[in-house]
Amino acid sequence: MACLVFLAGLLLGLILGWVQQLRGAHFLTHTLWSAWIASLLILILTRLILSERAPAS
Image (cartoon, rainbow, N blue to C red; front, side, top):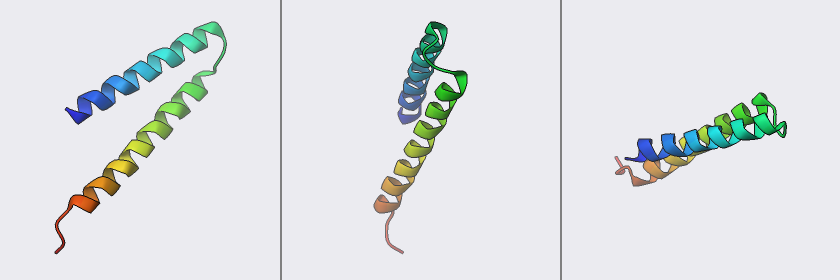
């Protein structure tokens, strides 16, 4: 479920970025960098949260 929500959010962001590109307000690289940074932040946060929940060995 979490993956579907992530993909839906990323898709929405890319669509909105594409609309801004069509308006001439953003470059393609801005939209791509935003998606990459958002994905990296979610990956880091997921790793941090899951490492806190892992049982101590």
